[in-house]
View (cartoon, rainbow, N blue to C red):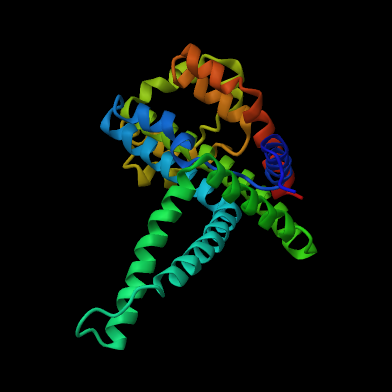
Length: 274
């Protein structure tokens, strides 16, 4: 008795729900699409920062999404083996052509099997049923892996490291943006100093050695000196200093008010400090 379409879809949905609770499924293009769209409208200096942030986020996605990548590869490999084996059997029906020796015949049969299997695999992988079967097998692969205590803990640790790496990418972006903007226009520091909360969090005392390193001229190096004294791992500091620095743009305010950023920072703090 074969499983009906509705039953099969219900099973696939259940498998996907269970798997995505423990593993991250990454759509690489969608993950950084907003950054890619933004880059073309930025100055050369800011475009470099956006490109670095895009690369860092892509790296996080590739790293944390590795189990799903491996599971899909295993699923595709299993179906390829099934399809290729069937094509190799069919290819045995090919007879030798005039003057063709045994080695040449076997090579032609192998080539015929590969070509046929490649087409059938493509048709299978691009069909709704094929995509569903590949996804279901990948989910089963992942869920079976969780039966091992070591692999289960490794999956959890990978997600935790994904949290840390994601926040680190945002922290690096904030620090680099802070430095770049103040180096280009040191008077922007006044907008930060006018905000009591931001001023309170801004560490602006320099040693003589630091001033000497800057040639006692902060007109183009204020941004390079200040970031080393700011705690950009703290979300409250990032929000306090970056909002006035970016002219209190509504979009910036909305982004920095996103609850997900606060939760991300709190999770990172719990993981790093155990």
